[in-house]
Image 1 (cartoon, rainbow, N blue to C red):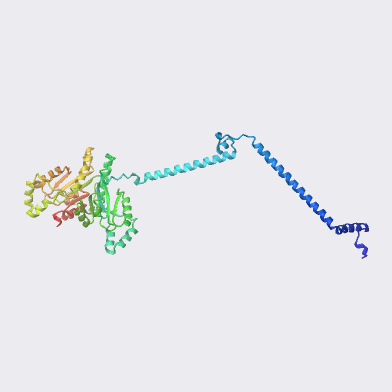
Image 2: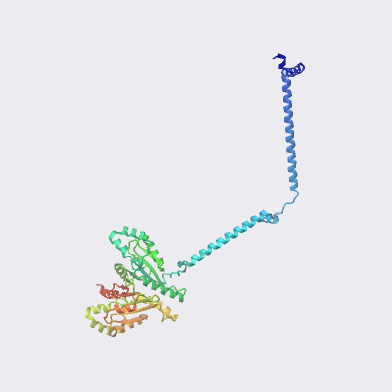
Length: 443
C-alpha cells in the first residue's frame, strides 16, 4: 500500500493542526491562565445566581409575612378552642371524624350500661345480698354451736384418733369442697333462724335476736370446709371461732354466750363449771319430721330449769319424804338451774310476738316435761315459774313414767335433761336430745 494513502488530509489542513498543537505546547502558561479565568467566571456566575435566588426567596417570605400581618389577631377574650374553630369551617372529613367519634362513644356507653345491668342482675340473684344484718352481740342471744354438733364429722374424727393430726388436716384440706352432712344441732339452728326472720318482719330494726357462733378447736385451715358447708345450706352464721387444737371454752364468755351445745361431753362439762348453760347433743332419728315454722324446746325440771335441791332430798330421804317436803314448801320458790337463763331468753322473745297479737301463731313454743307428780309438787313448780315471770306453754307431769312417747308426740328440736337414762329413752323414739351434766345425778 503506498505511503501517501495513509493520510487523506491535505497538506494545508495538516499544517494548521500542527500549528495549533505547537502553540498550546509552546505556551503552557497562557493556556493555564485562560482555563483558570474561565473557571473563575463560571464560579462567579453560579454565586451570583445563588445570591439572586436567596434574595428572591427572602423577598417572597417577607412578602408572605407582610401579607399575614395584614390580618388582625384575635383578642384573648374571643379565644376559641380548636374544635370550636373547626366547627365554623366544617369539612366532610371533620364531619366523618365527629360522626365516628360520636358513634364510638355511644357504643362504649351502651356496653357500660349492659355491663352494669348484668352485674346488678347477678348481685340481686346472689343469696348473700339478701342476708339480714347480724345483731349486735351485746343485744343478741348468743348460741355457740360446736362444729361436731352442727355437722356430722365422725369420719374425720376417726382419722384424727387413728392417724394423728397431720393426716386429719390433710384429709380436711383435700375434701374442703365436699359438703359436710347435718349433725344433731342442724335443725335447731335452722329453727333459730326462722324465729329471727319472723321477728325482723314484725320489728325491722330488732336487735334482740339469736346470734349463732360456730365454735371449734379445728385449725384455721380446716375453716374453709366449714364455711363452704355453712354457705351450702344457707345458714346465717357470721361469727367463727377456730382455736387450732386448744379448747374454745375460754372464749365463750368473751362471745357473751347464752347457750353452748357441743358433741364433746368433756367440753360441755368444762363450760358448765364456768357457769355457762351447756349441753351435750345426741342425734335423733334422721327420718323424723320436724316443724319448720316453730322452734320447740323441752326442759326437764330439777337440775335443768330448777336447782338440784329435790334431787338431794329424794336421794337422802326417799321419794315419799321428798313429796312431803314439797307439799310443805308449796309457796317457796325453787332455786334456778343452769338452763333458767336460756328459758328467760325464749320467754322474752315470745312476749314480742304476743305484743303483736301473735300468741296463737308464735314461732317459739316451750315445754316442761318432768318426772314429778302434779299432785305433790306440781303447784310449787308452776308458782316458781310465775314468780320468775316465765310463761311455759305446756307442762307435763309424768309421775315417773317414761318420757320417750311424750317427746315423740312433741317432736322437739331440743330436749334438755340431766339423767342419761331419760336421754337414752328419748333417743329410742328418735328425739334429738341434749344432756345437761349438772347436779347430783352426775356423781
